[in-house]
Amino acid sequence: MKENELTGRKNIKICLYVGDFKLQKASGMGKSISHQKEALRLNNINYTTNPSDQDYQILQVNSQFPKDLIVINRAKKQGKKIIIYSHVTSEDFRETFFFSNLLSPIIRIWLNYFYSKADLLICPTTYTKSLIENYPRLKNKPIRVVSNGVDVNKWINNKMLGDKFKKDYNLKKHVVLSIGLVFPRKGIIDFIRVARDVPKAHFLWVGQYLKNMVKSKGITNELKNKPENFMFTGFIDNLIEAYSAGDIFFFPSYEENEGIVVLEAAAMSKAIIVRDIPVFRSYLKDGVNCLMAKDNEEFAKKINLLLNDSKLRKKISYNARKVASIKSLEKIGKELKNIYIDLVNL
Image 1 (cartoon, rainbow, N blue to C red):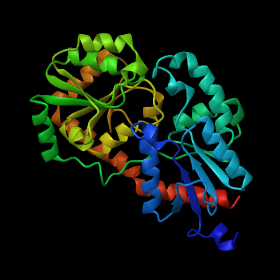
Image 2 (cartoon, rainbow, N blue to C red; image 1 turned 90 degrees about the horizontal axis):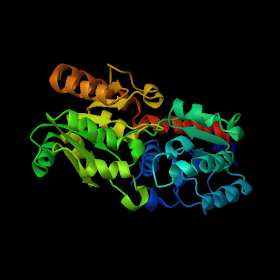
Image 3 (cartoon, rainbow, N blue to C red; image 1 turned 180 degrees about the vertical axis):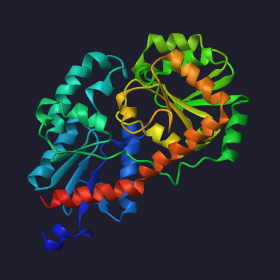
Image 4 (cartoon, helix red, strand yellow; image 1 turned 30 degrees about the horizontal axis):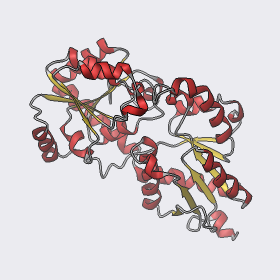
């Protein structure tokens, strides 16, 4: 390798391995891959998505399937450095698909082995790093914390689109919004129950519900007995319309590694309410750029507080946008560039 490839910045090339992207596209992992592409583009970092190319120095892997291990081992034999994003933990695998709780210990064993193949692991938050560090094979593994980031140039509140969305769904009250795949872990059951306790607002959950894969009696029962002010939209194409229509972004998830939708809501200058869990405490501050709550009673109180106090709502919204700006894709790309240079120089 030429000296300027080791010390310079122009000739480093990344293989951004996307695996079965179609399967991941609607998930947070799929969004993260798209973010990585844009972050590299914004920083003029040369990359390919084809692991058969030979002229790259670093293989960057996002998925954790067995066949991905073949790609990693081949790249290792070719002398490539390996970066693996730790999008998945055994903790956030629980309360998702059918049998996920039973499979969680097996997933932990697999991730412990899979992640050990990396020369460097990237975690989206210090919280995820604290989990990964406790996996037996990863105690001494180099780990860097880099946010999944958010496209602050894309996620901008648009009143006209918001009004259109409200008209399409006949929303005449304040709108409390959540976005995500419908899993028990995401807090959908609590979202519906809180809606029942706050009848003055419309509660909308936007996201795909994979009934045959989730099979949750709790979700099924809540949807059968849902209050009149709750609406489940299913998947929609234009999320900017939905975000723009929301007055409050309410995300009662029990476990996340970062929560990309929270970053999107922050970029959209939404007043955010999240569950008081370690991951959100790692980058949000209660009463400054969000409100946090521990249970449904607190959620209802804090939603009512924001609905009744427009000044507080504006303050939280304004500060939320600041959080998103810190995690812009351009800044994330700069962090990645420095990581690449350090890794290639090892």
